[in-house]
Structures are given as C-alpha cells and as structure tokens.
Length: 204
Image (cartoon, rainbow, N blue to C red; front, side, top):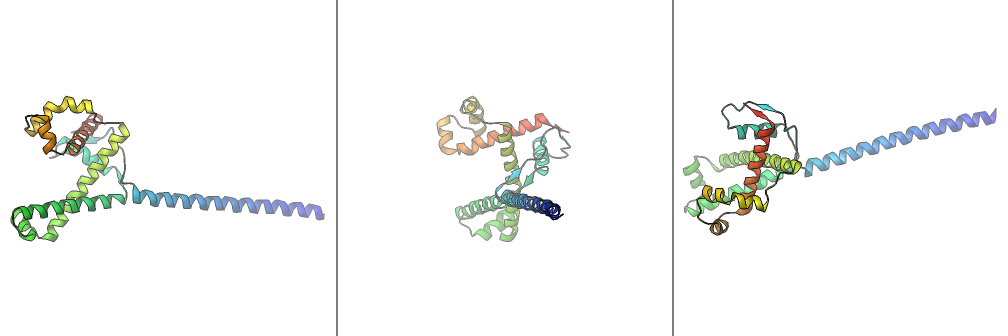
C-alpha cells in the first residue's frame, strides 16, 4: 500500500515537473518573440507586403507613381524609418540654408520669398516629403534585393549614350566629374524596379 502510494506520488511529481517545464518553455518562447519583435521594429526599415498581381487605379497619377504608392501602402515600416526620415530632413534643410547663403539672404527671408512659408511650416513640409521619399526608396531597394534586380558595369556602358543625352553632356569623363555617379546609378536601378512592378501588376 505504501509502495503504491509512493508510486502515485512520483507520477504526480513527474506531471507537475512536466507542466512546469512546458510553462517555462512557453515563457521563454514569448520572451524571445518579444525581444525579436522589438529588435525588428528598431532595426528594420521595411518589410515588403504583396507587390505582385495587384490591380491599381492610377487616377490622376502617372502609372509609375501609382504602382509604387500602392506597394508602399502594402508594406510594413519599422522604427528605423524615423531615423532615416530625420537624416533626410536635416540634409534637405542644410541644402536650403546653403541656397539662402548663396543668394546672400537670411534663411527665414529666403523661405518667405521663394516658398511663402515660415521656418516651422517649411520644416513640416520637408519632413512630409522626406517621409514619402524614404518610404518609396526603402521599398524599391527591398524589392531589388528580393528579386535580384541590379545594374552592372556592362549595363552602364550600354546606357552611356542615353545618359549623356539626358544630361546634355558631350562626353562621359566630363559627366562623371560633375554628376554624382553613385546617385545616378541608384536612380537607374530604381527605374528598373519600377518597370518590374509595372510588368507584374495591372495599372489602369
């Protein structure tokens, strides 16, 4: 009888230990998910949503703008986006301050004369533009990575005549000295991604 009772007690103990282990495992998994989620929110700029087989009404927008805006709306953005937008905003503000100096004007005077805005109003406007640009750029770069879309040196050689014509330059060496080639290549890459999106989706 005593041995039978001890056997029952051992089984109960094993069940309790098993339940405790399951609870601990569940708690560990939840903590890991929370930590990963927090890390993602702070370090990931964008997670792509659906960017294929969409039907988009362009309305008054150009098809290129309409499809990019549609894909942006379907994507998820992390907290890292805010940092990128802030950086873009400050770069833009610095540029306009340099423009004011170039014209020999006070920054506030420059904004009032050319944009009819106060510094506060103009900063808000720049923040909105920066937010839109960073979202679009982040999504297009993510799609380029996902789909393996790239611009090679051979591509650039083939595109030279078109680029020279578009920028009104007679020779490539002069263009390279005066134009930011990295930005130019990035712009051309983004155009390729947009063409890819137009091929994958229907824009009315």
